[in-house]
Length: 306
Length: 197
Image (tube, rainbow over all chains, first blue to last red; front, side, top):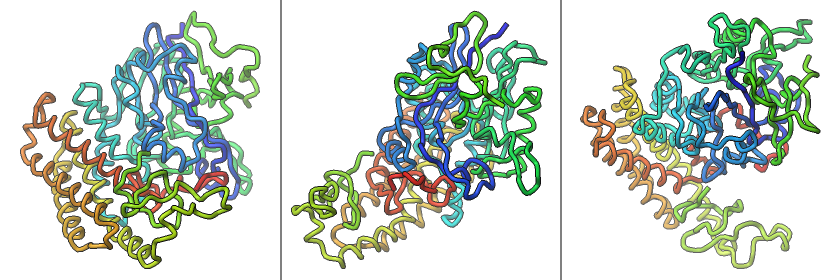
């Protein structure tokens, strides 16, 4: 019995992103395609998202252009491909406060947003630091915090302090402090609903960018199976490694079950197809009785994952 | 992004359509037909190099003021956010003091920066922004009146902060460092090889 279907939906991409930004120490290793995605958890008459992307208007448009984001499409267009509208989304788990994850809250008028307390507190604190320490503040849009006030006034913001089990049946929120950001959240879906689940999926946010973050290699050390931190972290690489270990332990060390949303090769691990917008839909798992939305001619089976 | 008539663009780079340059318009981009030449009507041709230097000096000088205003918007919003979600703690109360300090410093700096005639509209609007933030800060003296989500005081302050943020966007010139989101020192600030910038 599986409670939820999970999808990773691409909403835009950077065609050539420097690999060293994704994998710690991957200097001079060239560029890879970086998809911008969010995840959807779809249950019986209920749908939630992990992150909301950014709004490609006004300053969002400027940022999108700055980072060379191509083929951005609105949540309305992207969600339609799996039969949902933004109005159908009733919960959003915000993994962290960067603009490309928390920058489009206005598109989801019926959703309650969950974000870690320390993530907000520390960003607000960091804004009081001298200009010479501005590096800490990168990627934060003060407008997102302002929009958060509006969400709070509408009683649509839940500030989570640490881990939270069963925020919805079988869905747990976990936090990795001082990693990619001050309090990066990940979402664990125990799809059989059992406390000692044998069917868990981890939606890792930016704690894991690519498969190599979980199965990295070092030519010098002659090692081909170790955790490598993401290339961009405000906090500690040690904490990132420890978070990777916790996530992997939650899925019985079955790496495929930790989902990196910025990974272009998700289609090698999961049934996937390109939608009419030339954006990828990956079907991570299906709820009991749900029909596949990707198994069509031209789709990939996701069986080439090693 | 929406560009306003308070932005200033030294003529060394092409800028969005209609950018106001001291009352004159710059052309949207270098004229493709002219192979790298600005259009004949572009203000570029009638501007003096010395003026560009003065504008650049002004933008460099005003940047700390702009950044402080940006941070103050975030912090003032943050205080309200933490208050609304019952997350305001003792150490967060110090944020108010930090905002006051940043604002005072910025007001002093702003008064000391004059700049050439062409930037006065921009400078005046920065002054208005600081004034608005000062008013918000003053109203936050009594935090307890903002706990109630339906409080008219809260409504007023939130509206003022949204106005302040809109003003900040109007004053932005990311290519000159006046950017609402700071990526200047971030790893992700590296440009992709096929990037536009």
